[in-house]
Amino acid sequence: MAKKGILVDMNYCTGCHACEVACKQENQFPVGICGIKIHELIMEEGLNTDRVHFDYYPHFTTHCNLCASRISSGEDTEPACCKHCGTFSLHYGDIEDLVKMMETMPRAVLHSPL
Image (cartoon, rainbow, N blue to C red):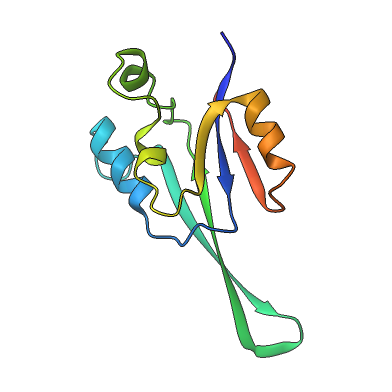
């Protein structure tokens, strides 16, 4: 069986936190625990400090198991965070396929739990 992962296309993440909500609800995590956390990065654009650029980075924690029970039961074909991502920034699949997808994504991050 091929190793699975999630590819994040950071060009399209808007920081809506839908992935966080879906993860918490799917796994019934208590307050303070989550499998994915959105980090907001605010950077000044060049020397012009009147303009800023926002980036949103979905960070997967050690609690993320790619919704293993959800997928193994046949309930769904992708983790809850990917299913509920409104911008389709999160892609679930075989690591080899995701690496190929990265070639066309200038700002992508690959997550694969141990």
